[in-house]
Length: 381
Image (cartoon, rainbow, N blue to C red; front, side, top):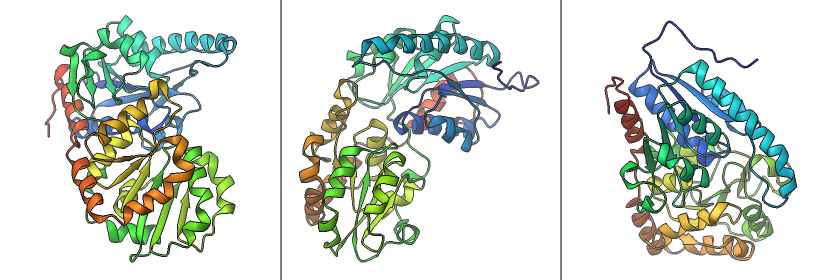
């Protein structure tokens, strides 16, 4: 039987639920918000609600927070008949969400997107518990659009979000980023030593998102023999856990490539990089703006409403990033990135322009707004 463990003697402590996850783009902002709330109010009790089998079920407990998993998954758009099972899981998740809310009795619920966010926020609004939405993308998701009228505030990362949400509820805060990302300057030597890199070579950091990206991995793999000949260049390649076993035997460890399934020390990875290859998830873009390095974006075509392309174009239109379509990555990605490394003036322009788009205080703004709304004392930052 499900049960939330809660200190019933601490009746005055703030109690918050953060719901969502599934990918790093949802999870990392959630973790940043939680960490900031705990700094502002160390006695706050924070419970995460995620989706069973997703990355949050491992990462959240490792960070020291309790989490409850819902048996929820996304709808199958290709085979409608398979959605009967999905609907049953949704109903079960709604019932479980109601139980979580009744037992934990939160002052507020914060939704960060992902499968688990919808059921928990729906049931919280039904029970008249204040809900807050943190929308990472420039194109709002369906669940957040449906919940917008019930939300007390909606924290967004892009301007002109009034086309999706009530204007009086929107606060432009930016996306919360992982701790330490804003302080990568001065870490280069430590980063070089950590990843066992050559200090004389230019470094490309390749990121396919927390779960990896097949097309980016294939684009790197096809050019590996050529990359080994580029003696002035080295590569840190985060390929994703599901691809690592397949790729590891194909990479010559004696050459200028460091292959990793996942990078926990992202501050050091960013510090080592001269140019970054990345998907265009909203959370990642927010980090890239703060880091301020030249970026080559390869938007994923496998996301709702093609929102990664819209995220990327927001940077491209400000001359703050280079965009390579996913379908062209295999041919162009690595050659164009190495070409960019040789164009010092363009790298400087991209770097300066992307820094102008940074909103580094997002987690603090969101945490303070929520704590002040529910009238819980905090020291502020």
